[in-house]
Image 1: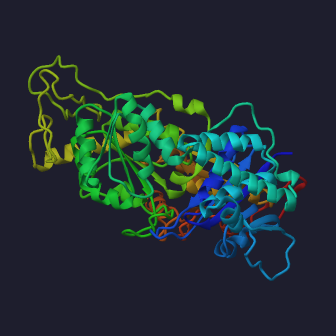
Image 2: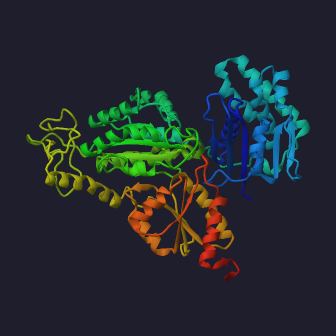
Image 3: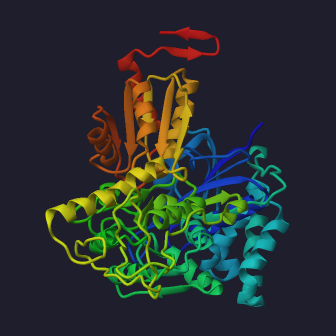
Length: 586
C-alpha cells in the first residue's frame, strides 16, 4: 500500500509554526520520501496567522493536498480557521486551552498543554514549538535519534546551552505525548528509497539553478516573495567568483543587469509585480538593444502593494506585454522544475539576445519540495553568438540577414565598435527613425520569437496528462498545474474523461501543441489565480476559441474540488459518455 500523508501546522507568526513543519519535512526527505508543501504568512509587521502544510508520499506528488490527515494548532484562532480542512477520520493535536467545535465528530482529538509546559518546565514560551515537535514526533513515530540529530545540526552552532534547552523541550513534549497520545500506524514514516532527496524552496531552486547555468552577476532590491533568492545568492555566489549587489531600487537593479550582460556576463534580477512595473522601461531597452537578461517575477496578490505574502497569477499580461512599444521578450513559467527551467531561461535569452521573464508565484517560491540532486548538474546548452574580432570596421551589430540573431560584440573586441542606445537604429547602431528602418528592425526582433518556437530547446515544453480521447480539455499554467492534475485523476475515477495541457513557455506560446490540443476537445476549461482570467483571455485572442474561465483570488492555490466541480458541470452540459473498467454508460 502506498503512503500518502498530509499534515498541517497552524498558529501565530512567531510561535515557530514553520520550524515545526520544516523539521518534519527535512526528516522525511532524509528518509527518501517525496514531499511538497504550501506555506502562508501574515503581511502585518506585528504578526498574524500562519500555517504550513506538508504532503508526504512514497510516490511523486504534484499538489500539497486538500484535506489534511493530521492538524496541529497552537491557538484557538488557528483551530477555528483550519478545522474544516481536517478529514473526518483525521487527528487533531491542539493546545489544551482550545475550545473544540460543538458538533459531533469522528476525529481523534488530543489536547496537550504546550504553552504551560514551555513556560513552567522549560522556562521559555519560545520553546513551545519544540515541545509541540516532540509530541508530533511521538504521534508520527519518528525515531527520536533522527530528531536529536537534526536539533544538533540546527542549534549546536548557537552554543551548548541553547542545544540542551531545545533537547529538554523536545523530551518534555515526547514524554507528555507518550502518556496521552496513541500513535497511528498509518501515520508512521515508511521506509523510503535509499537515496535521500534534496529539499529546497522554489526560490532556493531558482538561485541554485541560475548559478549552475553560469549566472555570475545578480542585482536586486528586496521584495516579498522573491527576497530569498538574493539572500541565497549573497551567501553562495561570491564563493564562485560571482557578484551580488543590493541596489537602491528596482530600476537600478535592472540597469545593473543590462550593463553586466552587455559586458558579456550572465546576469539576473528577482522581483515581484511592483518591481516588474518599475523595470518595464529597461526591459524595452534590453529588447531593442538585443541584450540578454533574466528577470524572475515571483507573483503576489495585487494591485499595488496588494497582498505581499499571498499567492496570485496576475502578472501574466504584464510579463507578456508590459512595455511601451512593441518589445518582444520570452516568458517562461515552470510547473515545479525551477532548478532546471531557470537554466533554460538563460540558454534561450543568451541564444536569442532577448530578455526572459521567469514567472513563478508565492506558492511556488515559498514551498519546500524534494528534488533529484542530479538536476543541479545541468550544464548550459546554448551560448551567445559573438563576433570574434576578425572583421572590418563598420561592424554591423544589428545586421539584417537570414537569421534574426546577429553577432554581438563584447566591449573591447577589435574592429567591432558600434553604437548601443535605446533609440531605433540601423544595422550599425546609428540612430534612424525612418519608417523603413523601424519596420525592418521590428520584424527582426519579433522573428526571434518564431525561431524560439521551433528551437529544439523549447520543443515539448508542455506537460500533458489525462485521457487523450477526452472531449473536455483543461489548459493552465504555473503552480495551478498541481491541483489540475489531482482533479483530472479524481474525474477519471468518477468516469469522466478529461485531458490537460500545461505549457511552460507562455511567450511565444507553443502554437503547434496547443492547436492540436484545441482541435481534439470540445470544451476548454482554464483555471488560474487572477480575477479577469488573463490566460483565458490570451488563449481566446490568439486561437479564436471559447473558454470556460475558472478564476480565484483568495491568496491561496486552487483546490482540486473547485476544478472538479467545473469539470462535472461541463460534462453534464456535453452529456459526456462516462466510462468505467466494466464498460460505458451515458
